[in-house]
Image 1 (cartoon, rainbow, N blue to C red):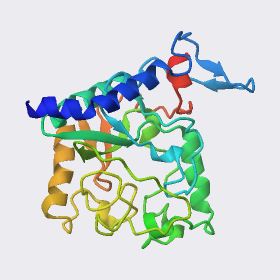
Image 2: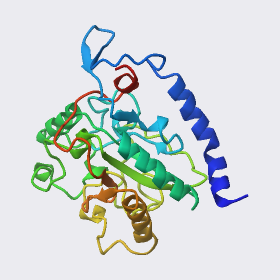
Image 3: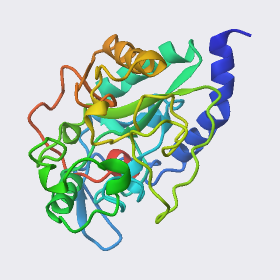
Length: 280
C-alpha cells in the first residue's frame, strides 16, 4: 500500500462523517440564490456571495477544529457570528487548500483548519473584549507575557481582519493517523501557549513551537528561537501553502492568505453557518 493510499485510508472515516454532515446540512436540498435568509425569529441574515463555499464540499479530508465556536480561545467564550463549526472560504482559496492537502497526504500528513472566513461581528466581539481590561480569564494560556492594555498597540487585535474578506485561513499540520483532540474543559488550569508541547494544551497538531493564537513573539514564523523539528514543521506548512498561492503573515505561523484575493476591499458579516452558503 502506498503512503498516499495509507493516508487516505486513515482519513476515510473522517471524510465519511464530514460528507454525511454536508448532506444533512440545513438548506442543502435547495439553494435559493437570495442575498439573505430568515432565521427562526424572522430576522433576515446576510448570506455569502456565490464565490464562497464550505471547505467540506471541496476538500472533505481536511480536518476542521473551528476554535471560535467553542470557549477554548483567547476570549474564553463562543464568538459572535460563529453559529456552526464550519470553514467557509472563497472558492479559489478552498481549491488551493485542496491541492495543498493532496501534497501533504502523500507525505503522511493532513491539514487542519482553526479559522477561515470570520464575520465582522466576530471582529467586533474581539474589540469589545480587548477593551475590557478586567476580563483576563484566558491570559495564562494565550497572552501570559502581554499586558492586555497593549493588545491593540502590539497588533494582536484590530478593528478589521483579513479573515472577513474570505481568503484568509488559520491552519496547521497533523500527522496521520490523526489522534483525537482532547476536550477542553472550561475552568481547567491553563498552561502558557509557548510551553513545551507535552505541557501545553495538546490538540494533535505537529509541534509548531507554540499553540494556536499564541500572543507572543515566539509565534513569529521565522523566530530564531524556534529550531529543529519545530522549525521544520513550520517551513513544511509555509512552503506547501506557498506552492498553491498562499502568503504567510510573518507574525503568525498559522495565518495564510490566498492571493490574489477575490474581495480585497470588502469585509463581510454573514454568519458562519451552512445557511450562509447553501440557503442563498
